[in-house]
Length: 190
Image (cartoon, rainbow, N blue to C red; front, side, top):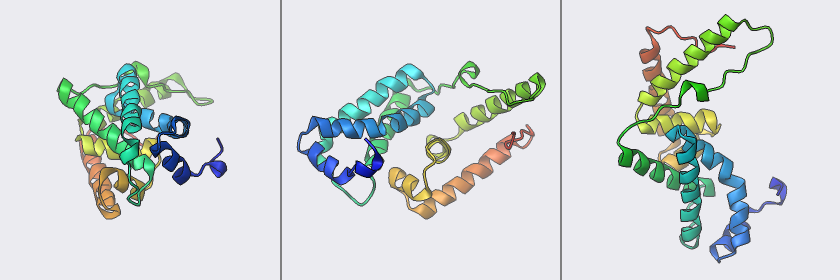
C-alpha cells in the first residue's frame, strides 16, 4: 500500500480493536526494517527470522495495550526487538560474528582483484571491531547506518534524548577510531 494512502493512526486504531487485516498492513510496512535490525544484532539468518516472527507475534498479542506516546509506532516495535535480542544474547551468553562469507563484496567496474581483497579484509576487520562494542553502541550503529534513522528516531527507540544519542554516537566513533588506529583501515574505501 503506498505511503500516501497509509494513515498509520487509523491503521493502529483498527489493529488495536482486533482488526487482523490492519495489523497485517503494519506487518508489511515494518517487517523488512525489523528483520534487518535483528539480523545485524544476531548475525544469524535463522535466528533473525525466528526472533522477527516473535517480535510481530508479541506486537500482535499486545497491540490492544499500545498507547501513542508521541513517538513513532516503529519505536515500539524496535523496543520489542531490542528486548528479544537482548534475551537471545543473554540466553546464549556468547556473541556471534557474521562469517566473512556472508558479507558480500561486489567488485566495482575496473577494480583489480587485489583492491577487492583489501576491501574485503578491511570490512572484515571493521565488523570484528564493531562486534566488540557494547550492545547499545552496536544498536546505535545499526539504526544509524543500516536503517538510516535520524538521531531523534534513534533516541525514541533507545529511550534517550537526541543530544544523548549524538553524544553516544560521537563516543562510539572515537572508540572505533582508537581501536582501528594501529590497523590503518581506510573506512572511506570506494
